[in-house]
Length: 180
Image 1 (tube, helix red, strand yellow):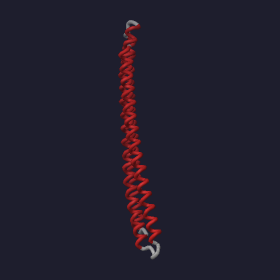
Image 2: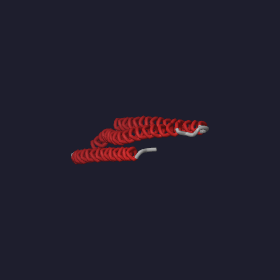
Image 3: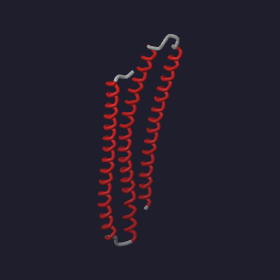
Image 4: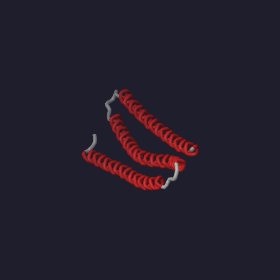
């Protein structure tokens, strides 16, 4: 049985965790806003430069050359923007995952402590029921660990796929730009 002090300490720890995660979420939003402002300023400046360049074009060939020269940098900038956005999102997600894993591990330890205490104080003749309960808890812990490993593997595969798609898009834009 948990004491009032233990319950209050647990609630306090949960509130501190929630405040910390909320702060991390706001940091992620701030980084995204900053990234968007930087990208918007750069795009506005480049649009002005491009407009000036278009106004100074003397013939259609020069216009085509100017337009094709914009494709590769645009693709590279888009890829860089997406990479920054992905880094921000994955960094925030990693922090949430780390906290979740720490909390889950701590809760598992506390629960196992309660199970052990209950087992020690169980009446004679309930050893089989206690063993079944301990086995069930161990199986649940193993299942949770398997899910956590699968999520990590899926995240790694998704990141690898993201990097491959980004590199392919940039290379394709380089090929198109060279053909023009």
